[in-house]
Image 1 (tube, rainbow, N blue to C red):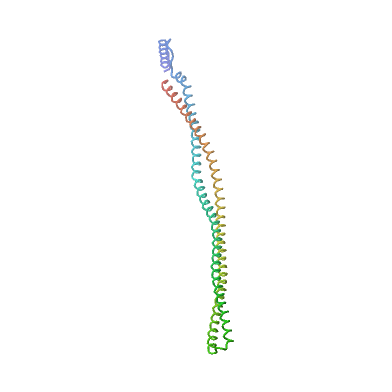
Image 2 (tube, helix red, strand yellow):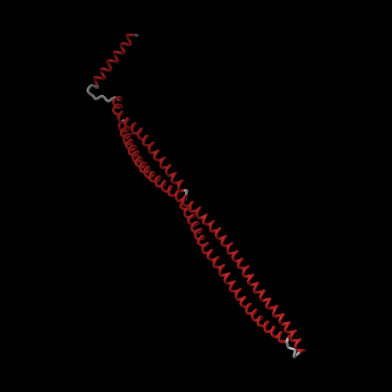
Length: 283
């Protein structure tokens, strides 16, 4: 057995020597040498793959930040402060017009009350003047009647007529006196009625002015409240505009960074593609 193994070993060595002798002088191209020559290219590809992963992470971070900024901007946009400001300004304008109207109404109430009082006084004076004239006329008639009555009281010449005239004159005198008393009462009634109406008009004027003042004060309080609310909303609007300007500025910056990062990633991916093609043709 030992001899057989030794023979086979010697035969194998002889065959290898003959093969090496036949190939002497030719270049040696083994798989080990080929792999060693491709190793730097593979390292570059691996490095590019790793770099792409890192750049993709950066790109994703920029994308997430842009989404976050857009979300904040859209959320702020839902707060339509401009519409609220316009609505409040409209209400304030209406209240201002209403308060100006109260001033006009106040003048109107005072003027109307004065005109009613003057008109009433004028009408009452006309009636009083008429009554005074009638009273004077009746007074003259009473005086004449009294004179005639005295005449017939001391006239004894016509006795039959005397009694008749005295009776007629006494009746007439009583009638005239009753009439003049009634006119005087009417005159007093007119004065009393004028006074009563004047008090009523003054009371109505005070009530109207009190209601007007109360409504004006309520309108002024509402105006102040709305104006304060307007100032607060305008302040929030300014803050929102400032915040949006800051957010949009940052968004533009991040968008530029994203675009630059995307260009950079594309260049690396293009370089990786070229390296892979080179590796493919080198095998």
